Amino acid sequence: MTDLTLHFILFTIAGAILVLAPMLIGMLVRPNLPTEEKESVYECGEPVIGSSYIQFDIRFYVVALLFIIFDVEVAFFFPWATVFGGATQLADTRLLDEARMNLSDKLLNLPPGTTTTETAIAASDALKIAWTGFADIAVFFAVLLVGFAYVWKRGDLDWVRSIQMQMKEAKARTAAHAKPQSKTETTLAS
Image 1 (cartoon, one colour):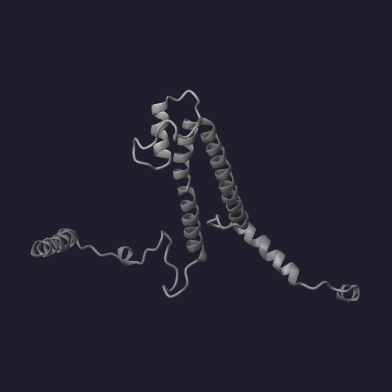
Image 2 (image 1 turned 60 degrees about the vertical axis):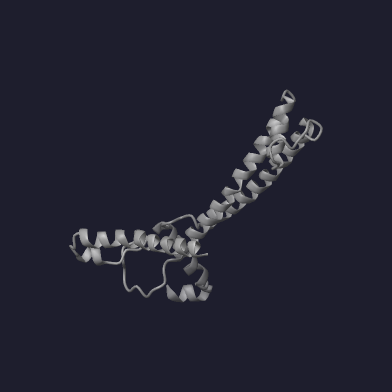
């Protein structure tokens, strides 16, 4: 027990040294040349305008969330590719029995040498697995594309909206709020 405690204390001390030593060396070595530009607030490459107590532009959050969502969804392609690749290799009828048993072990996540020639995945079954996997990923990718098209159409991927588009939207809003004049008002005005 004492040996474990000693190891824990040594590990904690070594970790603290590894964290604090570079900070102390940096503080002693780096030059101190403050300028107004260096001391200004820097946030995501955007120049500072106004007070720091205002709400950030919502585009920062939307783009970050969209990146996380699509990044996680794309990460699902890697395990699928592993299973699909193993299934298509097993679907080959020219595959030797030993290779079929090894691939069956990998596909079923079994220890090597567990599968026999009788329990190995047959080529016809592997073909069904491959086609099922292909159909599953096609549906998944279609849902992903529908979501991407929706986000694109909505304009969430436009980082900087064009001034012309903003002017068109403003004109459309003012035209919708303006009430039409009657015929007598237009004749009286002229």
